[in-house]
Length: 192
Image (cartoon, rainbow, N blue to C red):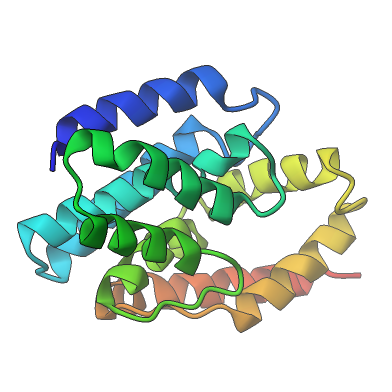
């Protein structure tokens, strides 16, 4: 498994090919999820190989946006399946990576520890101090797609999302859950 080489390849591809109009699903989001996955994986004390697989999934999890926003998880998994064999990933390792990518589809549905880690990393910001900064980027992206049309509609969507969401790993529950609840209460207070 040539992790560093695959990281260089996919980051280069994403920088070149991700649509520039994506305010949220951007190269910054990929880096953020990667960094969060690295921190959670370390705290959860998983093996080196599993950590590399989680980080591979983090790098590929939104690559499907290169092709289309709809069904991007499936497209991301297909991109991983196409390129990972070139970097020495076994069929078993590729299956784990694609499982993690598919687990990030909302509503998240992780079936094992590695999938829990990537799901928590993907939505780590919900319980962080930069929640509103990152949320504004998602608001701009969803507005551009015509999915939401007003700030009030956005706040209602966020309340619904935050109420349904829960972290899976002990690390994220400990480090992010309380702050996420604070954000939820603050948004509720803004709804008209």
